[in-house]
Amino acid sequence: MITITQRNFLPQKLKVTSWEALAPFFSQLMERAIDTKHELEKWLKDRSELEAFCSEDLAWRYVRMTCDTANADLEKAYLFFVTEIEPKISTLNDKLNRKLIESKCINELDHDKYFIYLRSIRKEIEIFREENVPLVAEIQTESQKYGSIVGSMMVTIDDKELTLQQASNYLKNPDRKKREEAFIKINEKRQEHAKELDELFDKLISLRNKVAINAGFKNFRDYMFAALGRFDYSPEDCFAFHDAVQKEVVPLVKVFTEKRKKELQLETLRPWDLEVDTKNREALEPFTSGADLLEKTIRCFKKVDEYFAWCIETMDNMERLDLESRKGKAPGGYNYPMAETSVPFIFMNAASSTRDVETMVHEGGHAVHSFLSKDLELAAFKSCPSEVAELASMSMELISYDGQDEFYKNKEDFNRAKEEHLEGIIKILPWIATIDKFQHWIYSNPNHTNDERKKYWLQLSADFGTGMVDWNGFENVKEHTWQRQLHLYEVPFYYIEYGMAQLGALAVWKNFIQDKNKAIEQYKQALSLGYTKTISEIYKTAGVEFNFSAKYINELMSFVKEELAKLD
Image 1 (tube, rainbow, N blue to C red):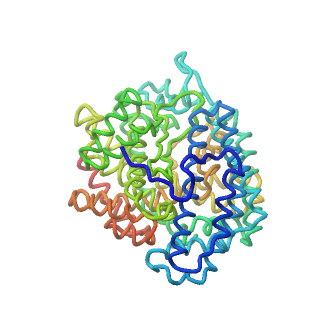
Image 2: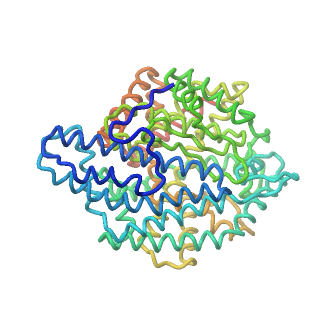
Image 3: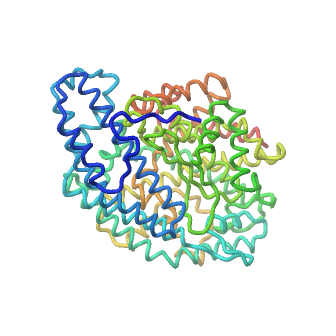
């Protein structure tokens, strides 16, 4: 069991029952003198303790709400924090930021230790506007409706009521008629809510654009690059990534798709033919329940590194996992860092598929990251940008191959799962580029119509697609496939990081194959840095490059092709 750090500034039994319970501590920080280096560093630690406490309180409210979206009290508790507490914290945080930057002894702080942190603080001051506080609260309230809408969607197949996650397993069924039935039922249900999700998205675009304009930005895209602290790359770098993926990756996906069509002996591929095993084998079932998934994950991690397994065991002991899919549970999966206790929470919708194994080890990578960075002095030091956080999780997907035989009964099944995963990595890169480029267009053209949005989405789908799938009769479904991407609703512009980190993860795996012990040590050292170095420096510590040029992508795609060839 991990030892929970004792509070020094806050009462041990403090709870957020009202703003009045928190206000005195913000007031103390505002009023305290910070005229010496010692006073300033003590102030920073106390502020960090308060930030970590508030962050974890909000985290638990979000976790409980997503675990049971039908519970109105849990939603009310989350919305209370978002609408009543967070806006007040936001305003006071700006004042605290200014107090920090104006301190006469700020230049006495260790430059290497505090550079990244102070850089972020200065950017927060630059973009903060009082008039955006209620808008941000409204955006958070509106965006969480996406989970409630999608979480309520149920379909009936074979007389069983299923979540969309559970129903999607039928898309791997060797019976083509059964796949078609599942595809139609899933998408009929989605289409019932398409207009509602369109309207929700329109509202979010309008609110987000207002925030950007208020903060003095031309558009929400530019605002988000500042808000996300993208100091290490620009929109132009994203465009280069899009182009490189279209040039170097899409042709490889076409090769996979042609192979699929040939092996399935089909004249035409339909949307329900894209996940089934091409040799008409039943879908792999690598575990039978959430408990089985957990047990096998621990054994898998233990084969890679004892510490990785210890992290998951600790989370289990502290009841920080909710793995199985069920009615009323929000869609998706996440690892939510807990800033105060440093023991995160893993949430997912497991339905006994190979994809669930990938999700579990992915979120397990995030969890390991939380543990490795837990001893950093300030909460802000542990709060990593997504480009770093996803390097941790995506690398774990690949290096955990060394233990994933725990999930598969024989080498043939394991090789099959590995092939599906590696091909999936390549196939997802064009989707990532599509979603990112879609967002650039949306927020650069905030007054677009729904018809213009559909037209642009279909154009992108053609640019980054294979052109080998027949959507005849399901054009309305294709127009709305972007609605499946939770990030568009809940965390805008958080998606290209997956592509950048995926490239880094492939490089980590390449190093791992050459020297396992060295690669693991570099991986651990990189994650232990939290966010105390630049993204490029953290990647370098991991033994890889922060690079998404066409040349680099070409090299990594060649490596993956070589590894796939070994599985034949």
